[in-house]
Image 1 (cartoon, rainbow, N blue to C red):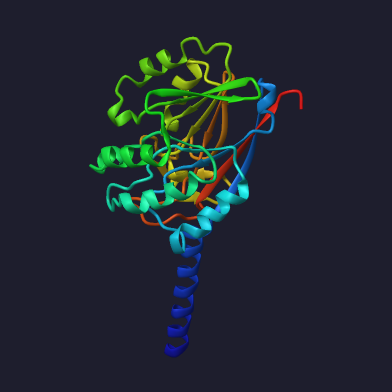
Image 2 (cartoon, helix red, strand yellow):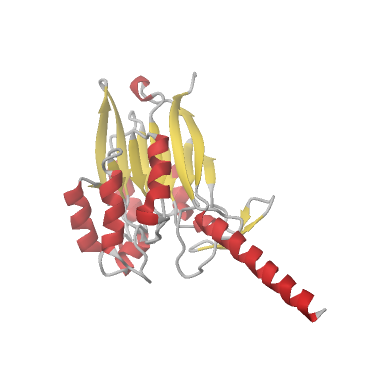
Length: 274
């Protein structure tokens, strides 16, 4: 009897270990479609979001992660912060990833709280710019295609951006007739984004609620939202503004994802009439 219990415990432990490994490393590519009043030339335009990598490494040299990104064949790649992790900061590892994805598509980046808490933000920013990344902390960039344009805006993380609402208001000035995309780390600021009339927002930070309740699509806890947070994944709409929340890729203080596999997000722009 004791032998059977021991075998049972070993088997149970192995199954639990395999489950946790899969939950933390089983990459997903979540595909979404944004329908709206987009310029004709951008119909079918594909945006790949990377969020909250937190210095995590997938396989050898990030090969599984890079393969998923290449399979998406995006027009642009957007990174919405926490490429670094303040608890195990490694700029070299982060840059190895960056140097690969800039060859796949143009890359746009906004900072998360971990960049600023790591003590290595200035070094990372310098190296990313040298590699060809467009950093949009409190800035904007115009993308042109066949005579049409869209505007990509970015907010630095709220941790170092106390007047983010006023900065966003300034960035949105004159954008009323343009299709605009905002990159921001924080989903809990959704009302601010909607109040400014942003068309499409990409965020992360919530880590999917870290532990998700099966079938209820509910996360347990997210930073700056607390228990049973409202914004942890998927698309949300308010007053014409659509916000995409990525569950992200890595972990930080809490080491496990449960019913919450790491995800990349692919959003395809589609004209409303399509």
